[in-house]
Length: 485
Ligand code: HEM
Image (cartoon, rainbow, N blue to C red; front, top):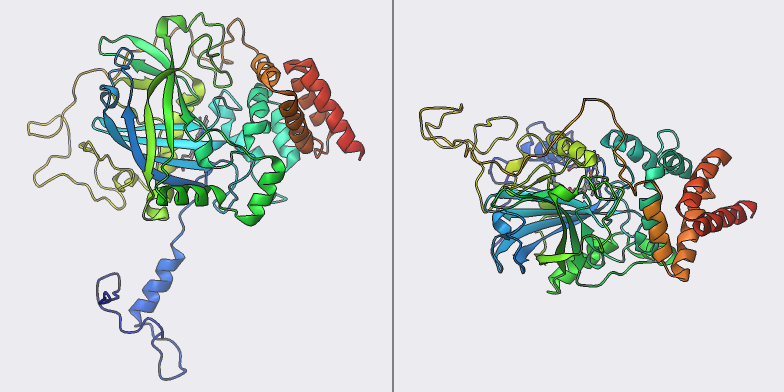
């Protein structure tokens, strides 16, 4: 097979890619060796800032197919017909560690899904857990600082992790989830995905519903024990990446079934749990799962950097018929992601192939900036309104409005009748088998017993006691036993 000609960035042929040009044999290198200068300079610039959270991840393309009629709840076009298929890209991730971190660790997993719909890209940026640690975005940077490396020791510190949680009783539900059997998924294929937040759907008649998304893995949920995970990390730090890549290369395409819980908007105000509190679930007895469709991943990216590292998901990318709820965490995220992308990838990140719309076209008056490649066509105006043929607004609302009331201020998330920080954590604990409870208690005690301050331990124990008397007693005994060792 004839080899292609190696060239410089400007396309000129390279004569020698093994020896740099020198002033005579053994002499200093010449500044005129363009290929050498360009090669070294380019290499220095290969890294971009990693994501401040969810840095380590894996991605794959696929499609979403509607299996059930949900047009009574949303007018979103990609959900408008049974059998309709939409191309997707999904990036899975761990949260706390840096880009080089290991996969098989106890940590939530990201489940960030882009639907390339014909009404624009819809990003659903979820996790493998239905709830989260906090309920106000103002706490997010502090939370993440406490879970990542300490600025002095340069290590993840149990003191910081548990000190934050000592001050965040609302995290008890998510901690119970994370320290339980599902805390270390066996692979990205063997876990569920959740939108976690409540979102708003609006149907063609303008009626509003609140929904929660559940992607149930068709591979079955499989998890690792702490011991299995430690062994696997030593053997293959990239175990989730290996598993996903190889499964799709073998044609064993993973799939998930999407269900939603649907709440008519009028029921939100009086529901026993605040439906916009991200630390709470809606029990299925209250709002049963309704099937929507099937997500299949069937194609690995050709280039991990271009397509996975440069992938950008924003919870603010909605399509008509789907919009945000007043969940404060979600509202904070509506700002944070695109801001992160502008820093990490630049203002024109939406023009990169993995991020650009595929079934629709971006057409607006945004212009220029670093690395602009989209500029309309000759004679297009760059202002609006105009008297020419440029794009114009539709005048149609994207969704139903949300009712608001009261005065501006810094309020705690409103508590509904059954809301406190512990009831649902206790319910989750009481659902577990005896063996599961034992493993949960051992996992919590393993971390909490390493904390150096007694007051931090006491505050955390109080949260487990408040969730369930037996839960609190067993964690307390296990921590004491480990500290006496
Ligand atoms: C107010 C709370 C939160 C803030 C401020 C926040 C902020 C961020 C930021 C800045 C990134 C990096 C984005 C990038 O550089 O591309 C990120 C990534 C991510 N976050 Fe959040 N986050 C929050 C809560 C959540 C929650 C509740 C979930 C899940 C339900 C979540 C899921 C994700 C996922 C999956 C990614 C990785 C996206 C990807 O694969 O590129 N985050 N978050």
